[in-house]
Amino acid sequence: MKSNKYNFKILLLFFAFLFSMSPVALAGNGITLYTPYTYISVPPGESIDYTVQVKNYGSQLKDVEISLSGLPEDWTSSLKAGGFTIQRIAVLPGEKEKLTLTVNVPLKVEKGKYNIKLIAKNHDVLPITINVSEEGTFKTEFTSDQINMEGHSKSNFNFSTKLKNHTGEKQVYSLMAAPPRGWNVAFKPNGRQATAVEIAPGKTSNITVDVSPSSLVRAGSYKIPIKATNKYTTAELALEVVIKGTYDMELTTPTGLLSSSITSGRDKQLELLVRNTGSSELRNVTFTSTKPKDWEVSIEPDTVSHIKAGGSAKVKAIIKAADKAVPGDYLPKITAKTPEVSSTASIRFSVKTPLLWGWLGIFIILGTLGAIYYLFKKYGRR
Image 1 (cartoon, helix red, strand yellow):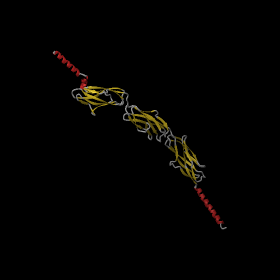
Image 2 (cartoon, one colour):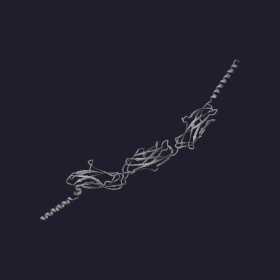
Image 3 (spheres, one colour):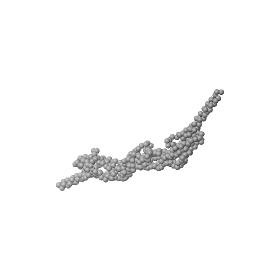
Image 4 (cartoon, one colour):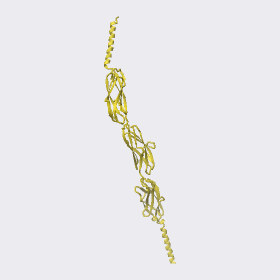
């Protein structure tokens, strides 16, 4: 009988031992870590907030050290409870405390599964799997189907470009250009002029880039670097404008005054200025004239071999009025021309009679008056 009681006590102790070794009692030496979301899928650049419960199944207060293991390089995390960053948390027996684990997935990350562990030191380990659903990158792409345009100096060049955000987050890009001095560049995202554009992850914005050359631009090829940039990423694109030569000239005088006076039968020298107001060099500039009857016009030199864009050359015009030109205004015209362009200057000349003719006229009048007086005196008494 005594032996049976002894065996019964042994059996009770055995069941008590088994009960004490149950998963709940054994888990974490009285501490367990719990979150319902141990496997999730996210895109690059996502921030994940886990609510984790720290449960104390023991009979004593537990001061638990919490850490994170296996976090990939360039990933960041934080542990907070009660609004504070923590490393340890105290849990009363039979109670539970909550903490927040935040894991920041970087933008530049490879697609795949990442395993991390939340550790309650000397107690429990909570495995967490994060599945990054796609390849992540900081890359931004600035492209155009046509990066080269050709036109004259007064043209406006409109480039159609595309800016694509390959990152996993919404990005705001500053739009910038470095054109040659005197040029103007305007960005028009979605048809409206702006200096910045916001693009959702994986999306593309159509941007028109309007380029206006300087009014003094010369023929040649010009690069216009443009870029979209922010603190994370920068994309650049080099546009090119080819300015075709424009031919234009102006024939005038150094002072701009196109009037003078001249005496009939005499000649006068007048300095003329040929300005190259185009963007190409002028070659073989020659001169012609349209003049009143019996007038003479000559140019020295009669040909200018070349004038650079923006430059000028001086020539001398020798104008001789007709011998019998009566007083008044006359308008000879001089034209400077090349095979590409011409310019005409109309010069107003006021003709005066020679001084000799003036005195001769006076003598004739005086002679006529003298003759009348003589005849009146001689025959007046009859």
